[in-house]
Length: 167
Image 1 (tube, helix red, strand yellow):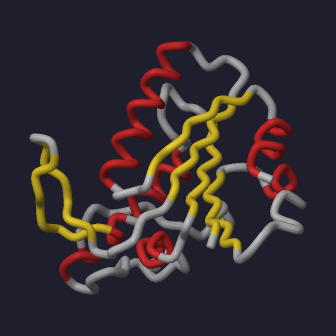
Image 2: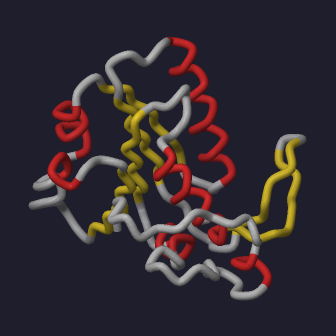
């Protein structure tokens, strides 16, 4: 399954997912997602699922069923947009609260014996080289923490070029 997480307006994304290969899940801002509270209830009270019941409580499980995770986000100072960042925060149930050391670094243990490809498409017409470097480092760290099979980072100055890239 392919999964697309994006911060585009409905009219900007309309028609992008038509005629794709295989199963596709699209996570977009429909105005109902609540902010992650940092309560770690997804680890303690309802292991593997967020305690907030707003339709986004199963993001960790959805990640575990994805072969490819595609993120489309406005580049905000070398990071994701607030919506995309919140989706990533709300998906922390994808990993366990326990720690392991990999290459001298501490990381959460994986909950699922699963890997997906991570592709991040940043857009904006004034992304600086410093922001690009920060974004590449961020995606590499996310890829490592999410146990992805690999990652790719792209920068676009138009939405049309993103659509072509993900088709």
